Image (cartoon, rainbow, N blue to C red; front, side):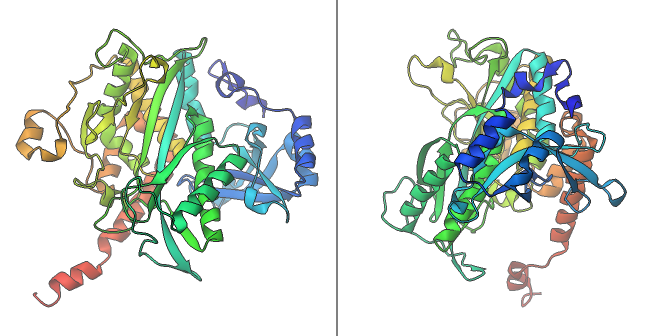
Length: 462
C-alpha cells in the first residue's frame, strides 16, 4: 500500500490532509456503538458499491486491507484479473444515521488497489487524485461546490409515481410533505458530517435543492456521493423516491448539478482566481482555467452529462446551458462568474452549469480540472464574455459570435470524447474505454428503441 502514498513527488497527505489514526477510529466505533462497517467505493458510472463487515474485523482491515472480487463491477476487471483489495481512508468514517439503534453501521470510503498494491486504474477516486497530483506540481489546490437538484416522487410499494408530490415553485414556502422531508434530509446530512448551507424548493413542481459546504475536491466528491444515497434513504422513510435523473418529466425543468470551482495555493492561504484590478475580479490563472473548460466543453459532456437522458435536459428553454460561452450575470452561458459580497474576494469562483447529478462526481471533477489545467499550462486566451440572453440568439448570431453548442445527444458526446486527448488522458485508458463502451451500448439500445411517441405520431398517418 505504500506505493500509493507518494506519487509524482507529492504525498497524498499533502493533497488530502491528515487522516485520523487507527486508534482514534476504533475508539469512535466504540463510542458510537457501531456493530458493522460498510467499506464503500464507486464503479465507473458512479454507483456506490459496498461490502459489510462486523466491526470486530476493522483493525485487521485497517492494517491489511480487504480483498474483493471486482470481476462483476462495472468498469473494473476481467475474470482473469478479478482480485483486488480495498484500502481504508479513515478520514471518511461516518455513521449512517438511518441505521442508528438497530445494527448501527458506519461507512468508510476506500481506495481500490491492484493485487500488487498499486492504485487500480479503474478506481474513480484514484482518477481524481491523479489530476490533483498534477495540479499540486503546478502549486495549486482545487476546490469545488456542486449544487445537486433532485425530484421527489410518491412511491406505492415498488412503483414510483411520476406525478410530482407538490405544486410549489422556486423558493416557494409550503407546508406540504416536501418541506418536512427536506428538514429530515438536512439533519441526516449533518449527522454524516456534511455541513448544509441552505435548502429550498426548485423551479419545477416536485423539484428541490440542498446546498452543502464548498471544499477540497476529493472531500466534496465523497460528500456528493453520500448526499445522493442519504437523500434516497430519508425519502424512502417518508414513502417517497428521490431521483437524480436529469430529466424525469417532460415539459418542466430538469435537474442540474452546477459546480462552483476555484484554485487555492498549495503552500499558502489564498484564492488563485482573485485579481482585484480586473473588471471581473479574475486573475490570469482564472481566465486561462475558464478558457480551458470552454475549449474542452463538448468533450467534457460525456463525463459530466453521461446518460441518454442527460440530453433531454440540455435543450434551450429550461434554464439548462447549451451555449459554450461565459459571463457574470448571464445564466444562459455555460460558465458564470457569480457575484460575491463586497470585500469577500476570497470567495471568487467560477460556476460550470452543464453537469447533471447523474454523473460520477470523482470523474466529473477530474476532467473539469484537466480541462482547466490545459488552459493554465498552455495560457489559453479567454474569449469576451457574452452578457446577452443566448436563448434569443439565432443560428446566424451564434455563428457570427463563434459560440459553439454542446452535443445534442449522448452519441455525439462520446464522439467528442474520442476526439479529445485531454479528456482521455485525464480518465486513463482503462476508465475511458469502460465508460465509452457502456455509453455506446446505451446509445445503440436507445437508437433502436421504438417509443410510444413515435407510434402515436406516425402509426396511423403512415
